[in-house]
Length: 432
Image (cartoon, rainbow, N blue to C red; front, side, top):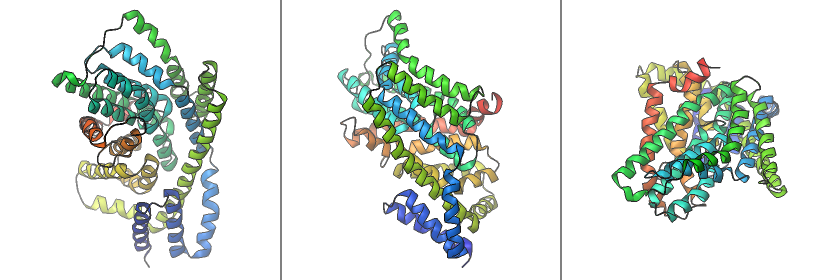
């Protein structure tokens, strides 16, 4: 059978198994190995399976995964989200919708040290939602700003999505981190503008609280010193060329541990929990990456990525139209799967197409992350929304109505990032 035909059949079974609930890593390994057997025969397929797992995990760059996960765990258990929220509330709480804006700002600060969208949303849901409800905020606005703010976790560095993209494509992880800074700030501004417009049209949705004296505002800044120190350690060190992203992960994890212990926010049980949780998540991600590299080896033999690129180019369609169609597909994938699954499943096929069309790989990494996150907060199956139900008792219908204005804001921001790639590429290409 023609290798390309084998590849198409394999992709069909891949989709069936994933929707049947088989773990993504297992699915990729099974389908990739089966495809290698069909093309190369059992002996050569087994030889590949003996080499690929070791070659995959025996990389220095892979150490970045557990290190940043450990840093994220220490940050989450240290209660940094509460401190970030208190500071943001002091500065903008007196504005109509100010608490919602404070929540978005706090999500940005928390995302800058956690790198996880779901962790950001859940942490801020526990802190911010009860506070907004106590002050008579509309449930739709309250839950909508938390879900939207949580999505910043994939864009503001350090981001696990950027780490995975860098590993799979061999694009500089450090440059991907830098590329997320301006788009992340742009997202925060867009969300704040959305909240302002909502509360301007209906002030009852986000009543203002009493204005805090300037002295209190300045004092509140001290509560964010942990976030600032960690951000400067990790991102400042990478930007300054002092250490690699992997070394930055180690320094960030050690810094989060020291800060948590010195401030007495991390106890022995917390540290043990963070280490165990990091081990579980690292094992899951590594299994998925091994499956991804097995599947990528299989795809290389089928030449499907090359054929797909040639087919797309032969359509003579506008590049923007092709990008738009691919971005819509990311929206669909993000509704059903978590970030790890979407990145690992789509990158081997779509990344070569984008490169053959002449797009900047760093720009594409930013756009890809943004679209995945929009999908994860888009009804009817945005999985981040369901994750929020663990920290906020809100009907699903209310959650859907609350998130829609922020999804519209996301579409505007993505349009700007597509129209002006320099927003993503300026820092990594001109300032590093």
